[in-house]
Image 1 (cartoon, rainbow, N blue to C red):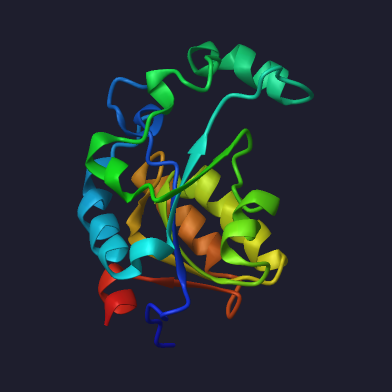
Image 2: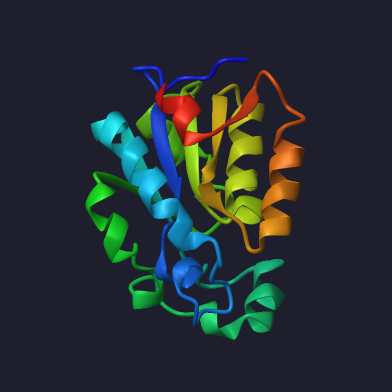
Length: 184
């Protein structure tokens, strides 16, 4: 299947934040620096149809989030903490920013920006957490989703490949493509 960046597609860059990028962070992806160039190339084409998302800690943490944040206390900080800042290398992409206290970013706020059944081109971090959570929910709601494999970073290379394999089970709602294929 040929996949290209349609003029009506929205680029959604999932959580390009310091908490997921820094090698000093327990959640820092070792793959993060490798996605900077592909994300910038995609954003150059998407222009104003680029959305950047941010994960922030729920306050107060309820339900399963309470023990989760007890297990990861470094992430239980206010939403204006520098940990949650978009990395400097991609901060200028943030024409539209969607902030959520959930791993998956698909929901009413993102749908208000993109429309209820959009074409989404998804990049970002982590492939095996926030990216997959967003992609599956968006596809289930009727969005057409392309995951840009070399513009996503996993918690590990193995987890990245596993998440891509799972999302690859959902064609034609979800397709996997490289930056070169999307920009062809």
